[in-house]
Amino acid sequence: MYASDSTKTDGYYYHLEPAIECAEQTGKPILLVFTGWSVSSNNIAQLYENTQTKNLVRENFVEVHLYVDDKMKIDFGQKNYRGKDINTVGRMNAHFQFTHFNKLSQPYYAIVDKDMNKLCEPIGYVPKREKYRFIEFLKSGIKGFEKSK
Image 1 (tube, rainbow, N blue to C red):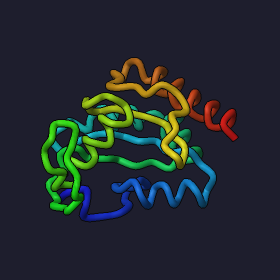
Image 2: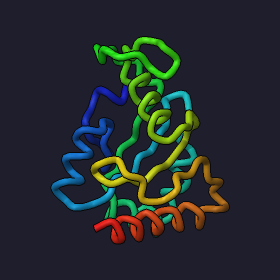
Image 3: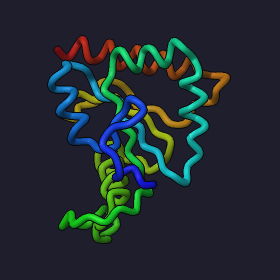
């Protein structure tokens, strides 16, 4: 299965456009999760084992998982930062990550508003034993969103 097979599942989106629409309708910020099928999703699952984390995300954010290795073919009509055709959803997501955050690592978490303005500093991998860092990141994003209103 590729992320492109479904717009929303398990409480989060697989595509940016419907997540932006939802953020506009709900008045919530967007939690971008850059990941991949070849990336162990253990980090995300381990962070979400914590009830506080799960509740913070579900109650305060529109969540979207952008898979950088999604092989679904698209006709984007542009070249990426390396000059290659953006011809898959994964390349489009990787290009988006690189052009907006100057990073190509997964997992990578960013909190933005509907206009893609960063609301706090994004973070990368967070070990389970340091889940408090992820909780602080989420709270920082909520605070940044409140200030931006």
